[in-house]
Length: 398
Image 1 (cartoon, rainbow, N blue to C red):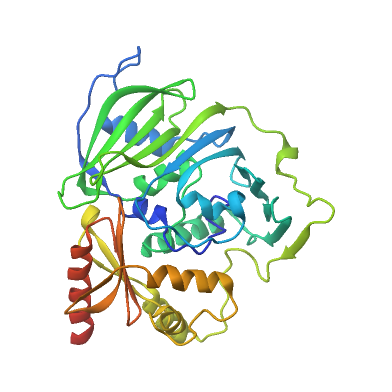
Image 2 (cartoon, one colour):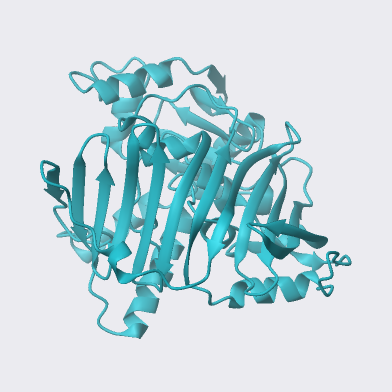
C-alpha cells in the first residue's frame, strides 16, 4: 500500500476516479515487438505486469493532465500542492525501498511538497507554506494481517468511484487499471517503445463499448523488470492524451535510507494527525456501523467502461453543497466560499430524476444533484441522467 493511498485528499475532481472506472479485458491479441525485443502476447504482458516485484528504485516522473474541466478553486499550497496534480504538467521525484519506505516530491516554482513514509511514520511537507504534518500508520502485527488490511483498503477504494487520487507513479496508475479486468475491454500489444532510456513493450486496453469517454489506455511495460514505466489515457472526445504519467529517468538501485528520514526544518509549523492514518475508528454499535457502511456504498449502473456510480452524500455535506443553501459550507472559510462559487458556476441540468449541476470533461462526467446525490462515470452526461433515474426508481421500490 503506497503512502499516497493511505493519505487521501479531498478534491472536487479526482482524475484517478477515471482510472478506477477503466476495465481490463478478456479478448487478448498480440503484435510483433520491434527494437530487437522478443514478441510477447497480451496474456504474457498481463502476467508479467501483475508478477513484477521491482519495489526498490528512484527516478523522475512527468505527469500531464488535461481533463477539459472548468477552473478549479485554489486549494492552497500554491504551485507546490499535490492538489495541483489534477491539471497541467508537473515533475515529481520518487523513491521507493519496499513496502515500508516511499518518498514522493513534487517540484514547483515556489519550492517543493513532499510525502514521506518510513515504516509507521509518514510526513506531508509543504516548503512554500513551511508546514509539516506527521501521522502514524496502523501497526501491522503479522504479514497476513497486513495483506488483509491492504485487500480491505483496495476493496473500499474500488467501491467509491468518487474517492480517487491522481497516481503519482506509473505503478499506481497501472494498478488502478489492472485491478479492474473484465470482458468489456479488448487487450492487445502494440510493438515496443523506449521510456526513460529503457526498452518496453506496449500493452493497449481498448473499450468494446462505443459510449465511453475513454478511447484507450496504453501501458509501457519494462522489458527487463516488467514494471510499468508509463501510462497514457486517451480521450475519445479529443483523440489526445488526457492523463500521461511516466518516468523520464529511472535507477533500479535501492535508495539510501537517509532519503526516508524526514526532519522538519527550524521554524516550520508542525502538526500531528489526531489518529492513525488509515485507521478505522468508530464508537458506533455493530448494527449502526453496518447501516452506515451500507449507506456509504455507491449504486453502480452498467458495467465496465460504461459503469456509472451513484452515491448519496452525507446529509450535512448535501445541505452545504446544495446550490442556494443559506450559508452552507461557506461563511468565513475562504476555501469553502471558493468551492461554492465553483459549484454555482457549473451548468444546471434536470430531468425526471431531479436537478443538479453538471461537469463534463474529456474523460468523465459528474452530476451533483440538489438532493445530495453524486453520479460519476467515464461516459457522457446523458448516461449519468439515465443512471440517476434508474437508481431513484430502485430506491423508491424498496
